[in-house]
Length: 377
Image 1: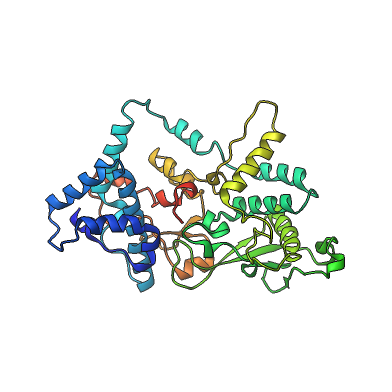
Image 2: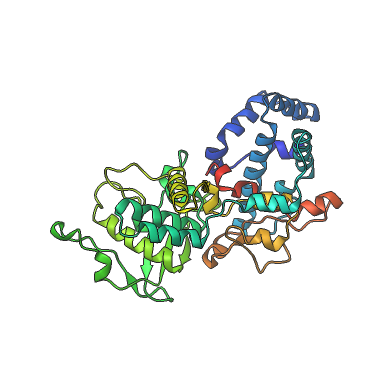
């Protein structure tokens, strides 16, 4: 426990987890050795504010990401325990959760699974939006492209729209490339028409792309400066993005982000969720309210499924996780081949299980930070 609490975060993570780091250092500012009693005192002070569980989850997420990233960059096997699997922290969080839920009915796996998947944006919903919004103006074209990309691209909100902490991460026009072939050799570029003909649909003058390639720079789990690439070939997403980016090019002055236009407010995940939810509600049978949140696009709920002892294959299907060939370490990485070469984001570390309880929990990935709505990045 002492070792866990006293670990220092790398500079690249302190921006997102700065407040938690400052609270820790303020408590241990005198430089005296960190004894068990002092750690307990710190935990008690955090618990007194009612934020102990949140603080522990933030530390666990930050330290786990940094721990594995360091080993991956060094090309070494991850020795010992990832903080995500620290049994002491797990037991503390379990105790807090049980105390808070003692007056609530226990949910079955089926009920938890249903809750986790209740508000997932599906391909059928995107098709509904396409049929409703097609040809109704640039604003709806932007909403459709953003919703389709968020659903099929599985981007974190900050990777698509930026965030208060990381506005620079908002997807820019130069990060989106279109190709007409599977081998990424035939690139087609959106055009900016002359002022007198900007009402013409430029997509009618150009070949139809086969897929999109996104160049992602700094993300939560990649602070190396080396970009990663994500290819998307969903026809509806490609068509919606192709149409919107061409329309966006007609207003290329000013902001360079994809989901914005001079004179418009910058699109956020919250605004997009509201627009999509309102439109799907309008299209639904009378009296049916479709509740859409930012988590709905990115298929959130992996943490809930893990806590409900869902099958590992089902957890893997959420987000961009896929099993790596390095099965001896039980490593999970982003499915992108380029991302696999650039970093390994481990969720389970090969180590003797400390006990039956921890052995079960070791099936769970560091998924707390993967839920879009809870992720500071």
